[in-house]
Image (cartoon, rainbow, N blue to C red; front, side):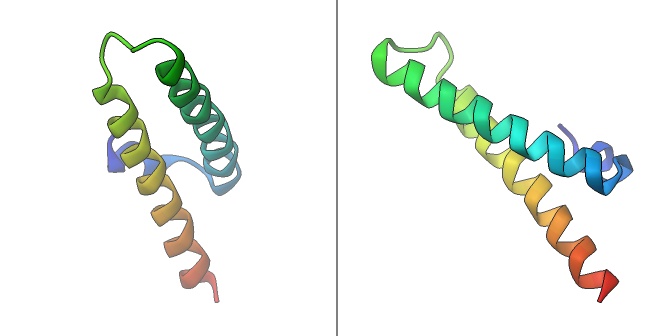
Length: 65
């Protein structure tokens, strides 16, 4: 997910998306520990996407204060 797409989302949508992506990430890591994924780079990509979303949420929080 691109940073431009993240910035277009509303704060509530972004928070819901972060929760969903974190759950997806945890499930993916668990599945990878049991049997290797076809593309383990997806884990790294998902982790970076979560970080981008959390960074945008934090920036919004700081701008509103």
